[in-house]
Image (tube, rainbow, N blue to C red):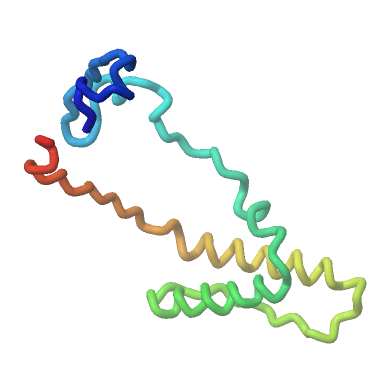
Length: 129
C-alpha cells in the first residue's frame, strides 16, 4: 500500500474500483448473458478426438475401459482381439477397428460425473486490509 505522500507516486491519479455484489457465485448481470450458457455439440465427435492415438494407446484404453466396466458391473461389449502379426496393409484397418471399439466402450461407460466445488470465502481479517 502506497501513501499519497510518497514522492515517486505523487503523479499517479487516484481511482475508484466499483464492484457489484455477488450472490451464490453469480451476479444477476452474468446470469442473463448468453455467453455463459453451455450448450451441447461444441466438441468434435469422440471418434475424431481419439483418431490421433496410436494402436498401442488404443489397446491400452480398451483394457482400462473394459476393467472399469467390469468393476461397475456393466455389460462389456465383446472385443475381438486383433492379431499383432498383421501385414502392413492391414495397419490402418487395425487402427480403425480399435478406434471403433474404444468409442463403443466409452459410449457404454457413459459420461463422467461432474463435480462442482464452491471456493472458500476469504477470511474477514484479510478482506478488510
